Length: 418
Image 1 (cartoon, rainbow, N blue to C red):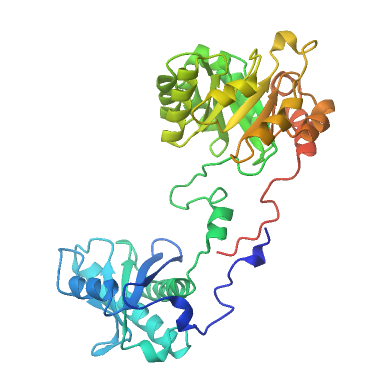
Image 2: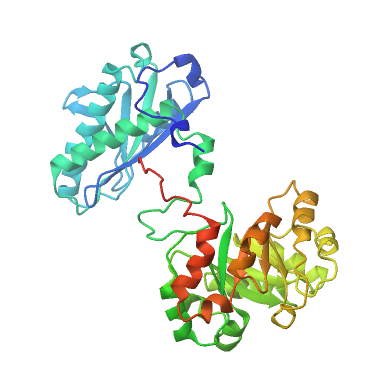
């Protein structure tokens, strides 16, 4: 998807009133974050007609005061409010006079000036300024000190939030494009999702935590890498080892290879509490166990993998389930890697039969650089590799042998414009 397919908020200033759908019961919402701490500005606003829900909320808030969150009209200077009339509601509890001054000074002036300039520039049509009102929630950090930055950041945030509201930003396609790429600046870490295969899943099966952490440190940084807390590692250290791996792989997708055969919900909960992004149930488990396993994973918002090692009829197992897993693993065990067949022909059959659902297929067992092209051609979404990488004398080189065939990082050339 091309970046220029998204709305350029500053490419068009004039607003077509007919396209807004404002009137009666309709209203529009905008949001913007501008600047750096501690003066950073975060504005949420609603704009709509006086005779609709926005007008009712405006009147209700103006007449109701709460300690530390006193609403105030946006004024360019005392006795000169902007139009459309705009009500500022502080997000942070105002506790002393110095904090009051920041709200009733630079923040208030910034919002008012942004509204007035938006009318002058045609962002807000002049013929509706008496009919519309704006509710504007404003964040001013208690530690903010620079009044000029408070003004500048809140002016910019208000104007941007207003443009976004009137352009109905963001479009749904942008949300779908960014939702699995985004990193919230305050949260400080990214929660990866499997949105653009293929991936390299490195099975960390060595039951030695320090050696495992060393392996992780030597794997090239790539958003196409998945780490698997292997069954032997979990058996030795328990599911708590997942948290240990997080110290070395903060932003990486981590799969807990539980190979669950019973008490599906319980084992999902154990791995979830240790921050696993995905859990693995054995396809040999009972239908009831697999159903409960998948249900619990979905309820908690993590991925459910079903490992079809030694399962004679994987399609039949999938057909029997109440809900499909996120990932199916076509797996040859270590003891049959040299002689057992891959069953990769099932990939196309799985995707064809369950094409109405987004289901990924992983392949495991004897995956080496030489058979990667065949696996990808067969339709594999995830290549699960263990010993070839983890027991290599050069983990970085061994990993790159796979990554170079899989492709570049998804966002390597992405231009961040916000």
